[in-house]
Amino acid sequence: MTTYTPTRVSDWANGNRIRQALCVLVGTGLLALSARVEIPFWPVPFSMQTFVVLALGMVYGPVLGAATVLTYLAQGLMGLPVFVGGGGPAYLAGPTGGYLLGMVAAAWVAGWLAFHGWARHPLTAIAAAGIGNLPVYLLGLPWLAVWVGSAEQAVVAGFVPFIPGAILKVIGAGLVAWGMMRIARR
Image (cartoon, rainbow, N blue to C red):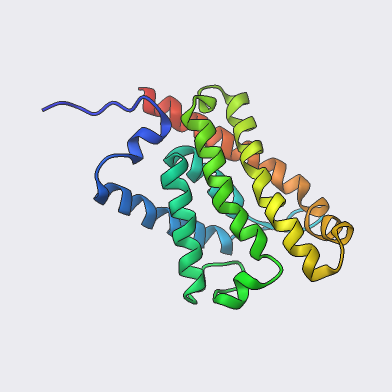
């Protein structure tokens, strides 16, 4: 019997369909829990969703990471209370819908960078998480601008207050991916 030795962080999540389905189930469970975790912080409290999205993307790889987030969004679309404020089609169509859709791209981008070696060093892993986080805002802010009336108001309400928390989540996700890479290489 041969032993399986992963060479990249995402390699352990690849393989048979049962392992991938279990990864998706665990990932959507983590995302649902992370939406319910509210960290008191200044200037606004934050949930841990983007941390989990980035970490899943970097650990699972681009395809499985994005598929996990898409499954999570489908669960919310069906009405399961997996988002910060519940679930259902109206929630995805609401002011935060763009951020939620941006999480799919975020998982893919962070996963792609990790898959291409960015998770091998802590600084590049953090950079990969930071780059991966950009689609959340690139899709979220224009969608929010429709709801609040202008791009400027969207930036003031949906970006500036979240910068400190986003920095911490990016650092955390990058370090988790780097740590998983070190474990995978052993």
